Length: 318
Image (tube, rainbow, N blue to C red; front, side, top):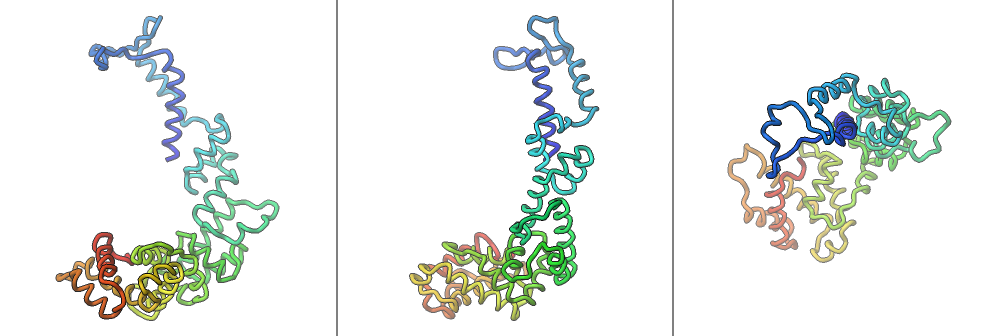
């Protein structure tokens, strides 16, 4: 992406140098004249003509000297170009443009775009603080977490990046996408206090039940097998969904127990419709009948809409 922006800037510079002087004449229909295809010369107003070969050779000479020197551009433009780079490319760029590549604004953006919440963001930073160093520590801690969750969290806290409080840890997990979901599941299974805070960070207001369940499992991955942990997740989700949608609960006659039943029905239906091993797929009529046996106060139309959502969009826990 960064190379593309440099190329655009270089092309614009060349167009400014040569575009005002030369042009290719066109026929009345808008096509280039046929003889120009075989004649490597450009026609310039008031001049005898400029050789295309000379123009291309001048451009090639500029390309051989490399990319445009970002230090010759306005600082805000150079920083904007480098902001499209990831951390690895930015480290390489800092070898060429040391002052721009080490700009704290760029590394602060990389930290907050990858790890959206850290306790250290909300504290007064000490003298000599470096966001580049913080990025390296966050990356090291994430790698450690993905090998051993307890050691990873211990690393974050030992460096003062995180405060050992369930709400702070939950926010860190919620706004971070670099943590391995399998290790995260192990950690949350051991830290139920963090899991409780993580569930409360979800806002399911005005969301259709299957979509809310997908959003929930996007942050807190469902286990591969049915067990106590899955039941805990669905129970917490059911209570949170009802708390976020009091009007729907009142109008549809829902309750946490009813939502719990519907969630299990959606998971089983997702497996039935998406698994290649199931030859005889459950029909909409069968799903409505089976679900209303367990949740009799739920309307047939509502259950039918649940089936349509899974059939059209797919698995709720994929």
